[in-house]
Length: 463
Image (tube, rainbow, N blue to C red; front, side, top):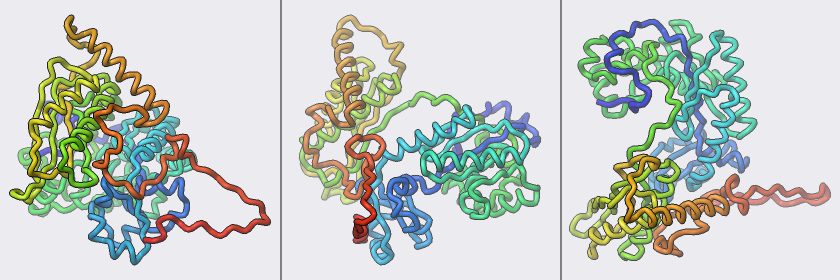
């Protein structure tokens, strides 16, 4: 049973040597509050105090909610059509996800936090781990207060900060800071008395512990372990036999012994996946080729960004047919002659594979590619027969990357990726890319004091 990603874990043979002595280091987790919604509110203050939800690709499911939307009973992952009446009756503002904007603001938050601590692990787009070297609780409180104020002043996104002796406890402390208004968005678990620590752990369901999924949470609940406090006091040897060394590390983390270090270097990816649900059901091979070519070019761009090469490309398409009403998929893996990061090589191989799995009597609702068997670009095996062509195509791909980075994504693309691209996912309620496109910069209008203007209706007031 797997709990937490393997990077930064203590070796197996050292776990049993750990005592219950607390770690001298303190970890802080900076967690953005309702991140996608908060990013939208930065540039549209009219959304403040109003229920807001952000939708996934193709405007299908809810992936982020404001606190006001949570109070209405809207849950994460719910399809929009299931809560349509609730959305309409309560004038909930509905927005399409703008991942370009969210990534850019995430980078700005990380840059703001580096002013306080250079040792930072970017765990996700809205979570950052840090190591605090201060020991005095009053100094730490002033520090994390200043961090929250700086991020909000510089970026405009509210964050919650949890501090504890381990990463697992810091995650738990950040959740407590987010849910309890009285904490002011910050909570130092290491400065609490034992009674207060136990109270916080007792109020944390075992399902909410970082690294425990729904399946393993159910396994624990069936055995009477429903809170973090109960899990913390469980018999170590029994739990080690049942959960293995990874579960034992988690138990040690809950007991205040650090077993998961800060991962300062991003490990190389083992695979790269690019996929999307289509904006409509696709039956035409030409449209399907456009989609797969687009994903292959996107994968090539990510390969070059990581300085990696791929030896295999897997093409898959989500299928819905009359003979099999339930959703299935067609998949094929193409082995490339040599590791490559050139868009044209990847597109050619992907389309070759697509032609082999395409069927006339089915409709496709999703497609994608996965690049695997990755290797470093700086140790590529030379080949006298193809090196000149590879170098030429690699330079061409690099020029396209440079032009698109300067003039905007999609300025130049391969003809195989199509022009109209009617298969693309719907994002009909997407906000502008305020920070990454010159044409979509926010504009401030001023009017003379003598001129009275009627308030501009919000574009989502129809909900």
